[in-house]
Image (cartoon, rainbow, N blue to C red):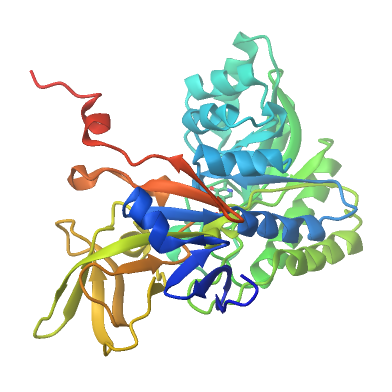
Length: 426
Ligand SMILES: *Cc1c(COP(=O)(O)O)cnc(C)c1O
C-alpha cells in the first residue's frame, strides 16, 4: 500500500482504486464475503501502538496490561498475549475469556468496584498477579475469601488522586465525586489495615484517572500525588513493589492530539527519576490507545431520506453495534468505502434502524452516497464490539482481523438462534 494514500490519522487505512483497504485487504470484498455491519481490525496497528509504549519503557522494569474491556474478542486478545502483554480485567467473565486466549495468569490484574466473592475465588484459583482493590470493605471480603482458600491474595489499593483528566464526565474516574478508588486522604490508613490482614499480601499501589485523556498534565499531576503517597505508605512501614498507573491515554477521533505513548512516558519517567523512583516496577493498563484506531466498522446505506430540517442516511449498523455516540455523544469519522465523484455531497445525520432517537452514528456529515453504498465508521476498535448488545433482537456483527494481505474471521456473525438459545417460552 506504499503508493496508495492513507487516511489522515489512520496509516493502516488507505484508498486504493475504488475501495478503502485495511493493510492489504479491500473492504468492499470483505463486505461481500462476510456481510455488514462488519468490524475490521488491523493487527499491525495494534502492534505499532504497543510498540510506542514499549519504546517508552525501554530499559525499565514494566508490564503493559491491556485493559481488555476496550475490545475483548479472543482474536484481539491473542495478538496481545503473543506480544507478551499482561491484561487488566474487570470481571470473572473477562478472566475466563483471557485465559482462553492464552494469557499468563500471573500477568493478569483485576480491577473494578464490585468484585463478587465468586469472582475473587475464581481469580485466586487461577493465580492472578494482583487484585486492584477499590474500597476498604472489599479488602475485608477478599481477605476472608483468601483465608478460606488457604491463600494470600496479592493486592494494590486503587487510589483516587482527585485530578481532573479534562475528558467527558462519564469517562472521568479520578475525581472525588466518582465511585472509583479510595480517597487520597484515606490511603495510608487503608494500607495499614491491608498490611495487617493475614489473607492479603500488599504488592503495589494503583490509580486510573479517566479515559480519552489528550493532555500530559493530568498524568503528571496524578503521578506526583501517587508518589507522595508511596513515600507516606512506605514511611508507615508498608513496602510497595510496584506502581500501577492505569490507562486512559486518548486517541485521534476528530483531530484530537493526545501525546504519543513514548513521549508521555519519557515525561513520566523524568519525573519518576527526579523523585528517586526510576527503578520501581511500573504497570500500566491501556485499552483504547492500543485498539481504538486499529478498527473500523463497514456498514451499508439502506436508505437516504430527505427531510424538512434534516436529511437522514439510514445504515445497517446501529447503536447496538456502535454505542459510543448514543452513550457519550462521541464522534466517529465516517467515510465512503468507494468515493463517488459524480454525486454532489448532501448533509446527513447518519442513523441506524433501532427504534430510538439516540440511535445515531454521526450528525451533519457531508456525504455523497446512495442506497447500497458502503461506509466505514472509523476509530471503532475500542468500546464498540465489547459494548455491543442485542437490542431490537439485532445480531451482533462479525469481526475480521487483517494482517498484511490476510483476513481472518475472528467472530462469525451472530444468528437469531444464538440469541434464542438461552430463553424459553412457557
Ligand atoms: C477502562 C479502564 C482502563 C482502560 O482505559 P482506556 O481509556 O481504555 O485506556 C484501565 N484501567 C481501568 C481500571 C479501567 O477501568
